[in-house]
Image 1 (tube, rainbow, N blue to C red):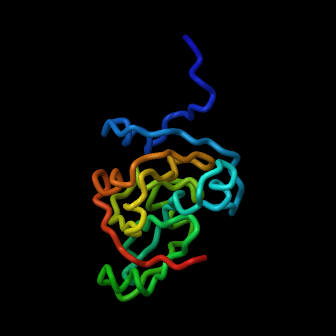
Image 2 (image 1 turned 90 degrees about the vertical axis):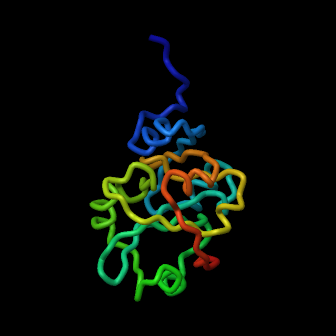
Length: 165
């Protein structure tokens, strides 16, 4: 059997979902750094951190989980987000809770192929970008896709809750 190019990463639940939906994507493995986040992956891969999208698992006042897709160099205004989605409050989930909801290890969370279906919200300016890089379901692994894929496959709803970091 011929060896595939070494940049290929083994299948994850996220890439399985993308392949099943016939979504074209590029693979971008990198050296994972604990707490490095989107800023680190962008720097290592030579991408603008604005185009690297982080997947954040949060919860509302009733502990109902939700996903927020945010630019790598922005933070989420939980007050603005809560107001826009009709919640009293929103806060990030603790890492072990986020992992239980998503099925992914924190630092390797993808919005695709999550263990549990959750509403997905996307910062509206992400949808204006021609391409984004988003976690492919493993630490140290991003996939490049068109941002509209998040709307088509996840039903992601646009919100305006970004704060400059």
